[in-house]
Amino acid sequence: MNRTDVARMIDYTLLKPEATSADVAALVAQGAELGTYSVCVSPSMLPLDAPEALKVACVVGFPSGAVKPEIKAAEAARAVADGADEIDMVIDLALVKEGRVDDLEAEIRAVRDAVPAPRVLKVIIESAALTDDEIVAACRASQAAGADFVKTSTGFHPAGGASAHAVALMRATVGPDMGVKASGGIRDAQAAVAMIEAGASRLGVSATVAILDGLED
Image (cartoon, rainbow, N blue to C red; front, side, top):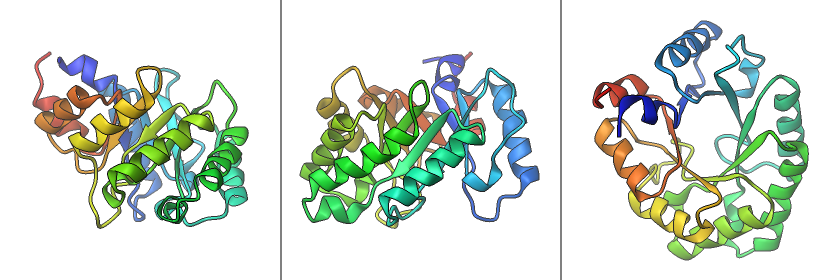
């Protein structure tokens, strides 16, 4: 995999609470220079002055997911109004842990309704905090609710970030026609390639420069 191809799979991410507007402006400039697919930022940073070729992604219900569905939907709608092309929502993990799959699907659908196509909806399932059966259930609920991607992690959960095992399981569950985004703890080219080989079609990373520097042109 060459540098250009991997760059076009990257959501260049800056979600630190202490990030400033100047930090985000630098992220946008560097993302455009490196040829990443998008930049991913917090809702308070929108709207962005980004070139047309660089998509803008925004998180909602972040990072805990423990927010009422109508609040997530309103947050997503505001982000879209502020120029977001893609929304990365965090699920309410309690719904998975309690086996409330119908409620989980309803939550995701509420946000999907607020993020109509061609906007893209990614669903963060926090895979490191779930069993394999729970990962499968969360992926199926996301698919049934009309999401475009399932995503491993926020990168903020103490259980950890992405793993090749989780990515492979997510890909096997959703099949070839839905996106799988690996995010959380991907800091070098070797890790990035492992996630892609496991089935990831998008990468959420902050260590973009280090990853791309490890790849050939």
